[in-house]
Image (tube, rainbow, N blue to C red; front, side):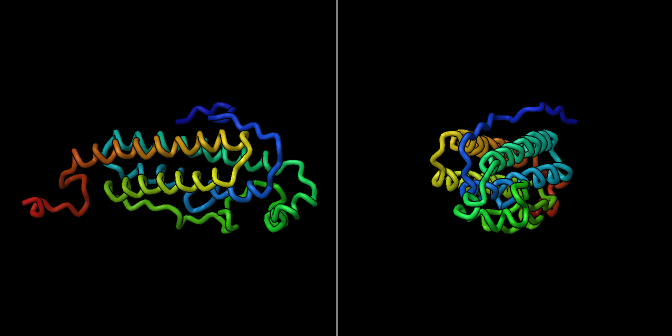
Length: 198
């Protein structure tokens, strides 16, 4: 199903360590509005989506979210490689370091481990697509917040790329919503009652 290119979707080349920033950015790896939740959400929802065009959108965006997960992990890794114990302590990265050293672990910026409660797969086309549109806006807001703390151009550049992709995904799901609304009928919309249309 997939062809994997051994390169990131967008380059990540961070020269200066910054564990305090890594501690914030990791939320887009395993936090409530991060890339892991997005990939699982969309790749799960596609099975019950009754419209092939929207299944395609969910598959495209879901697999791209896996690439974004990889980018976020690369950013966090590059921000935390070769740290001294003094840098770890001074940055507040010590609590993370004790549990994971500098390994990439799916958690929020607050240190809460990834949970399936971050995603939804309802099996209803309209409910799921609205969930997806909201998820993309929440992820965009999180990237906006990360950019408020970042001052390193090497970090800002890939974060801006990821933020822009959230906007594009929101637009793709908007296209999906139009497809769903244009094609609803009693066979592909659970709970639909034609009596309500009178």
